[in-house]
Structure formats: structure tokens, C-alpha cells
Length: 368
Image (cartoon, rainbow, N blue to C red; front, side):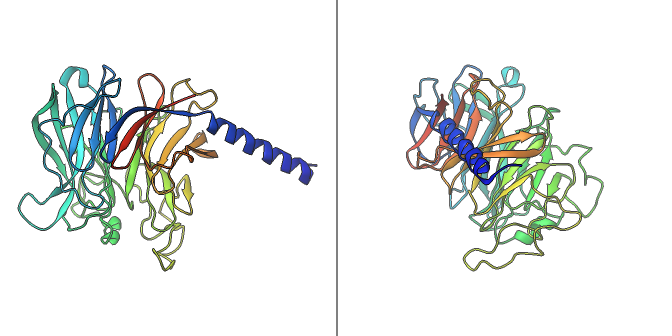
């Protein structure tokens, strides 16, 4: 029989262990002076591509020197949560030099609406050439909130794009005739894969992979299974981590662990409903989830296989210890840093890198 004293001692030991491991992290500044950086992608030679929300993309050298803004990036509608967002390399980058990025785009027809768009271009020196938009979220809607947006290449070379519900259009997340509150799956040139789940339905957009999302701002492939994992913002409370599967409904705004801002009233029908997916874990109060990465290196003893999620509002980095799809432990890191964590990536050297969201944003390498 376990005594209360032994339970207390075990809990205290776990807390000390957690604090000790958190304090062992040493954030090393790789680069600074970035203006609200949003995402980071490593080039094969160790340099980094970094997006800045106001609309610039730069190459940062391995020793932290900021390059001039790349030529060829389209104008973005940088207001509120909108701007230049994610950036990823083509899986065959060493052969084709293709770069993909997401951004908030004004209506090219001159209307008042905007939406998330995805472009690709060929990196040539300090320029992006042969640039074209390969995807536009539909319909355009006038809003400065909830654009998503993360880009993730699946193992089959298809591209996942996470899309927000545009805030005031939250009910659209349950409707398949629009792209609001969805994750879509496209070919690398923007075409629609023939095996998408709703491709044969006349009442649905063929690009949709999953629906019932609010605002997914973190996504990554699980290194062992190849599954798409994604974290999304709840309203007041209710941030979620999900495994995103073909054709499934993730519930927003019918079910949620959050409540309406300010007034705390119930949203939808509760926290569960048949036919709607439950998150692997959720956060109340919200941490304002951002970038997501899985650790595959041995740089951090005992952490291999963990998921790492940035926190904007909570100004921290969360480590989730996993047993398959089960979260068995949560550890909160970098709480003394006092900075919004916008992105987290594993570098080619095996270290974790985080991007801080401020007008003097930094790229930090987390050493031990």
C-alpha cells in the first residue's frame, strides 16, 4: 500500500527532476534582430530560411548573419494575425531548389476579402524565381484573424496546408463547401490528389482532408508512423493536439474544451459528440499553441521521441512524452525566457531551434 508520504515524496522527486531537466537547457542566440519571425526552414548547407510576418523572407547564415530580404516574395496583407507565415523546402530541394510559403493574400480581383494562400518558387541566390500561387483558400473573407497556417509534406510528396476558420466564420468549419477551418491536401504543384476523401462529392471542396478545425498553427509528421499531428488554438481555453486523419471531423465549434472570450459561456454542445474526434491532449487555460516538432536525435538524453510545442501567450516550450498516441507526461520549458515561442524545429545538427515572436525576434539553439 502506498502511503500519502510516499506519494508526496514521489511527486516532489518528479517535480525536482522536471525542474532540473528544464534548467539544464541553455538557449544560445544564433540570430537576432528579426521582425516578428514566423517560421524557420534549414537549407542543406546549414543556412536557414526565415519568414518575417510583415512580408520579408531572409537567409540567415549558420553563424547568425541576416541576409537582405529575398526578391520575388509577393506582397502580403500584413494585418492582425496575417502576413508572411510558414516556409518549407520541397522534399527534392537538392534537385529542384523549390521553396513553398504560406501568406495572407488580399483578393487579387480587388474585392475586400482575404485568405491564406500558398506559393512556391525556385531559390536562386538571393531571389525566388518562377514564383506562382499554387493554392488559395476559398472563399475570400474580410478578416485579420485565423489564417492558420502550417505547411507539411507527407511521405508521398503531397502537401498538407492548415487553414483557420477566419474567426467570425467559425460555423463554416463544419461545412464542406468552403476551406474555412480545414486542413487541405494538394499535390506539390497545386493539383488535387485523386484519392482525397471528398473528391467525388459535389457538395464538398475536393482539396479538403479534414474539417472541424479552429486555427491550426503547428503541424508535423510523426517520425515513426508518418501521421500528421497538429496543434490548434482553442477559444478561451481548449487548445488541442490531434492526430489528423483522412476525412475526419475534429468538432469545432460543435465540441470544444474552451468557452467564449470574456463571458465564459458554453460553445456548441459540450466537449464530446459521436462522430467527432477527441484530442490527444488539451490545455485549459490556453497556452496559445504554435510550432510543433518531434525529436529524433540523441542530443537530449531521455527525450528522443518527444513532441515539442511552442506557446505564444504562455511564453514557453512544452515537451510531451509519448507512448504511441498517448501523452504520458508534460514538461514546461523556457518559462524564464519571457518570450513568445512561434516556431520550433530540429536542426540538421540534432539540436532544437526555436523562433521568438517579437519586433526583435531571435533564433535560439537549445543546448544542454
